[in-house]
Image (cartoon, rainbow, N blue to C red; front, side, top):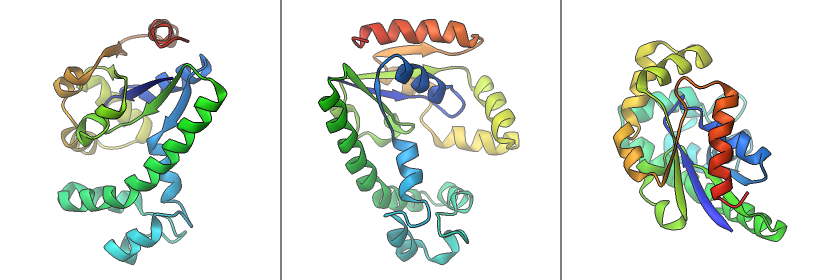
Length: 199
């Protein structure tokens, strides 16, 4: 079973590509979705977050206050490091369970959706190939402003905190260009990539 790391900056269309690959028969493991699950009300990472950061970072429903934590982590890089240390072991365990399931199902590949693949520096050795969904920064800004209703300055702050486009492209074994494409054209690109994964 090939292990494929899928990454791309915010607004690149990575989630859309992941959905297309899943529809084509790939197993998928979404690190962000798992992270949201372990920081939801009653999530296994909540006690550690409460102990490290205090109740101010827990929302009234008992979940991680993501907006407040995002702002804190941008202003204090050590906070992001500490948060990742609390969440990543749980994410890793859930991903290993998904690997076991995909192997048992005889899938040709498992696609790991890892937004911070390049930034983390720890994933590359565990993957057979890295696929980067790429587009221009101006496209990223426009998409995120439209999708999240964020002001431009907030989107650019997130971009500045992520790996640069050049760093992601340098890490890529395969690039899916998602700039100015219709969904049908993007699907054609994804299908070509899927064929090389044995799908």
